[in-house]
Image (cartoon, rainbow, N blue to C red):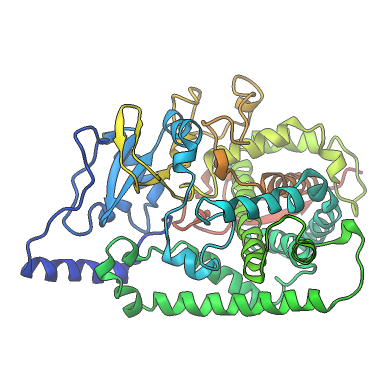
Length: 505
């Protein structure tokens, strides 16, 4: 849901709509009742799809503007599908806590079905026994505290490699590229046993896969226009990328199966653990090859693009705010290190301002501005409104985190100090609905510990080892912070900077 229809698809949709209107009476499709949430006017056939914004106005901004007129609980129609848009902490709590069981399933998505093994992953699987089992595998065997800590050496090695690469670079550094390499290499080593991202083929494949996940498949909302995805080539692109990724994972899994060398427990990657579970069948649940590939793919999606994006936003904000940069550097540079040594995770334990900067970045720039959609499994009443079964739900986490009702002090500005003062008790771990970048309830992201560990060590070392300026003498205050459209919301222009090595001697 996070990406707009591209211009060609939108044009074809509108042409098709108007041709149909010449031949038959249009009728609006609605599940409205007298107690349904407020709705903006909708067009025949397409409903409110045209109000999702444009390439210069991402969906979370368009939905924010609509909600400011129609309220924090707003009913839209995407074609024939009713969609409840939630834009307040209270509404999010009702959906993800009070009525979590009723809203913890996922709607069917052709894009997810094609790219994520028919939703045989954790993030997009419908609620049920399969989802409970694979999530349990992830929480207990892949993403528990002990396992996450066991990969600290990988995170530190890859961070050190990034710092060296930046130091060896001449002139302007494309920091987005550096951060994408870091996160992909960390996750690749942890999930697959070795780094693949430096291989140009896999890098291209990874980018294509992530971009396609944000595609809007018109047939999911207007079934009789499903043919448009064949005409525009979207179907072919989805099938091609899915096949390439599947072939790649098949090779990697087979390599693991053919490797008879025994590894120590702290040397096992995710595929090792999953194959061991498959062989022992110790959970009373048969995990097959498709499930293994779906779970591993989730690890990439949750741990690479979103993490690199968060780090790019963090660096952009602290470059834009020199006082924040100075305060953060004073904290991290309180640890003396030789030039060739990096800050380790043990060095970061008592760094409250570093954690506040990351938390504030998650507040202003959640990588998934619109949380993955949910769907109601039965009729329910929310804040006095009747919500029908099979209504999709979109939670605008971006809007909620900027709501003056939640943050009365400069909610639109980057102020990490807020999390050291009045809002210090707010966490992003799913219990405080003013800040839900990782979701909440049963669908809370199980990879939050892993992502946080990468965020902290990378950001701490970037500001510890270098002073930062913008090329061409541009002032930090003038840095363009325009957002892009997509499943993951990046800074529209990659962050390009000049890194000046810092010496504590």
